[in-house]
Length: 485
Image (cartoon, rainbow, N blue to C red; front, top):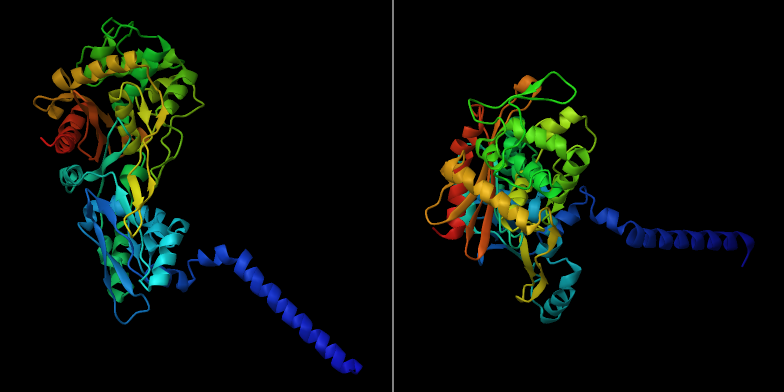
């Protein structure tokens, strides 16, 4: 071979080698990046190339699918009672990706999860169409309907869970949206998507307020402060008078911490302080427990940490560095203290469960197309915010709130109910929209099967009575639904 030909052969060999290196680099190094690239249309096409699995509630599918024509997407996801279930299912759109359970469990629902490899292989060998797996939730359809209908046209959220296991029973958020309206990729879907996004400027219907919105918890946070006072030994007898002035002067300042209305808060016992929602008593108690003690107790309840159920929930906040006056304000659920409805349901649940906080979860199991169980969630203890003795004391206090205090609208005949109202002011000079809260639990001979947190954003909420008027009736309906009353 002469020299020019040899050079050409070497050059061509190098080109082939470079091509092989590039192909292997793309297949093995960039594969993950390319498969998750939102601009890779093949990924979206693959998501809807076969029927997605279903999301199941009470043994029935709340999602489904339909075939599409005139598109390279073969199937489109459908949603039963879309607006009611949107905070749970999220959306699965040919054009706008996925969210919530449809997003977190996307690989399982599309059948691409590694745990479904055997099923895919069997389907391939038998010539069956590839199928997605099903996600079986812990949700209770009656409780979800009670929460969603209870909120109605009000802006807010509800979370209900089983304190004994952590299983989420209801998760509603309003205003909501219909995921059917933009599940495809037509011009109509685009118009509907843009309409939802435009509403987001004010109402944000795609925001899951139950998990992703943190609010000042107001007086409902006094439950955490009461737990800290009991656990630290600052209070041992919940019916003994406390050395609490009215108003309480915030430490290091000349600013009084007043109480709402003409209520008997001076030297009130902790039971009566919770019953009447005395800011002065709980502000003073929080300061006596101290920053470290309050932070520790709040974090035992789940504050300052994101939760995954498996959908991510934003972290609720209790500042870890504050002056004494801010500790007092934070201890009544103000200053920088914020909480998601999920977080406050966890607080009520831990108290109802005799001091044990269970890890919240909304997926009971993952089921393969052949109905075999691929993954089963087992209840898991998360922490122990209170001893059983102190939890029972706090239960007694919460039951007083419902029986003869500010939470009377949550009473259920023949059922023991504990609760706590709250109204949180926010914004500069409290000019923001106030929030009406109610957290509660219902208790039977078998323990507490349900704890609920309700928050309603309403400009007319002015005192803790608002929590009883706006939020407590919703909590009552949800508890009745779980108890099948």
